[in-house]
Image 1 (cartoon, protein in one colour):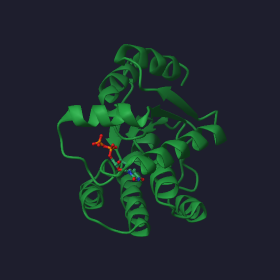
Image 2 (cartoon, helix red, strand yellow):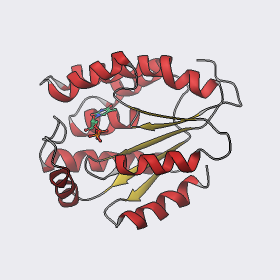
Image 3 (cartoon, protein in one colour):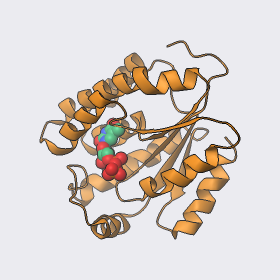
Length: 207
Ligand code: TYD
């Protein structure tokens, strides 16, 4: 993984399900596309034909947490090679909906997969690529459930988990933010959309 110093910025959006991060992606991308800057918008698991197939599997098929973790990293490996690294290398900015912090929060915090195993997998798959900036959309369980039910779509395997799982994932994201304060900012996503926008904007103008 040989990234030039002038590589593009790598920005990730994270957070508990139902915090509304997907709603904010289009305007954030538009905002980042100033001048002639190329911004690649992508997501995990997914972002390539193979990784999208893995996404469909992992979001729907019952499986144990270790298999889930390995599939997340399989999808991530393909995504990095095919999309993220080529984009960053040509100087484009990458705005990615979830990345390795999601594995730490969901499979590690939520499901109890060993933090050391996740760290070692991350180290093998992307030895020197963590995001330049990560925004974690945070909200309480009740807000998340309300938004998910308003969306009208059927919950995936992770959204169908109960409150205890949600709280573990939420706490894991808080720990991630505490351990990497220069990279990770928590956004209070329980506020009105306009207030969330202001908070996000204040973060992205500093990138
Ligand atoms: P999400 O990003 O919320 O997409 P949508 O807005 O379409 O629902 O869904 C992806 C789900 O995958 C989410 O519940 C978190 C989960 N996930 C993990 O458990 N581990 C991971 O490493 C990643 C990338 C995602």
